Image (cartoon, rainbow, N blue to C red; front, side):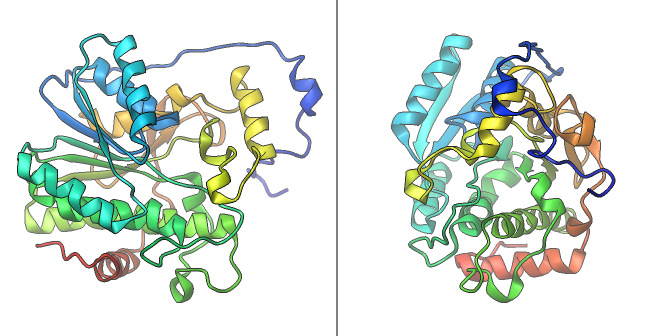
Length: 335
């Protein structure tokens, strides 16, 4: 094992040993400014980290719009948040980020309503379907959902983001610190590898976020774009997803859940949400920077600024991602 490398399975407690570990819950929180009157959009807020991001923003007074693929699940999530914070202003709208035909009408409805957007947290994503899958638009599922859908969303909503001088925070992953963009085969027609495809999508997404800030500075859009990552936490990303060809939970998510419940090594969805909340709301969170947990290996803990991953510091690659994305989604962002 290389120095500093985390091994998640080998050398850690056996599953039966985990039952003997004491439960040590620990609650973390940060100071969030008063967000009364602010419109915040959080993608992927029907469960996991996204749910906790929305819940934390609501507690500070934000009006929340939850674009979700499953409106029934989103409605149930909104009801749970209202139980925590009575009187919370939460709306649920249908949006499937893997479908460009879904993104356009969602954005058009918001443009018609005309309310400026103050906060956009691009959080939704899918992770490592075991077999290669294509969307209706012909794109590899992870690249389409994690990157292209969010790119199209920002492109369509640009007038409202500019009007609100929005804070746009894009949720990447520690996977964006490994691998590379598969430039020659973005749809992974050859040698599909679930985790390599996931890393490729998250690197592209991170480069988009840095390029958004550069273009905002150059054009005077007033948008503040930065990045966050949640560390590692037990969410549904690695859980069973029959629709993606994964019939049972992965061994990794079972292991992560067990340690997270006992306060060891990994964060909880609530603590993992704080990095994106901090990046999107703190007056100390700067544009173009990366924020994530400050604990061991950046896996858990309170949020702090971190060095931008080397793969996200390539300006030429960021411009290439932006221009390629405009071509792929068929939307040109006015400068």
